[in-house]
Structure formats: C-alpha cells, structure tokens
Image 1 (tube, rainbow, N blue to C red):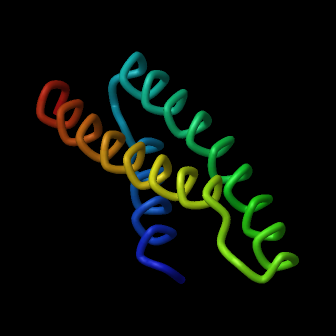
Image 2 (image 1 turned 180 degrees about the vertical axis):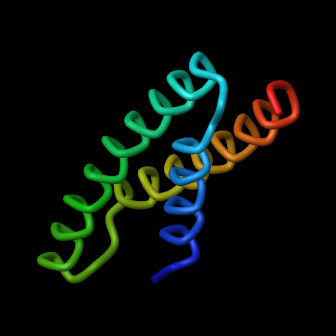
Length: 84
C-alpha cells in the first residue's frame, strides 16, 4: 500500500474510536467527503492509464487528497486533545 493509503486507513480508524459523539460525527463527515475525492482521483487514474500520461486534473485531485488528509489528521489530534 502507498503512504497515502496507510495514512488514510489509520485516520479513518482513529475517527471510529472517538469517544465524543459530536466530534466523531464531524470527523466522519470529513472522511466521507474525502472518500468522494478519492473516488474521483481513482477514476481520473484510469483515464491517465488509458491516455498513457498523467493529466493536470489527476495532479490537482492528488494534491487535494493530500491536503485534506493533512487537515483531517490535524483535526483528529485537536479532537483527541480537546475531548480525550
């Protein structure tokens, strides 16, 4: 698995173990939004394979996935510190 995939799986599992219901719901909403972007990125990867070059849209979606994962990890740490 790639670094992104392992980070994503770890973050999603941390969200499921949150004790505070409101924090868990908010973070779960972020995970679901990230799933949509990951799906778009996967679809664009198929297009890239067919065209045999990486498209600009794939690069943008890849960067957006990385940024959102970084943001999600920050919010998880903040929620852990805030709610224990």
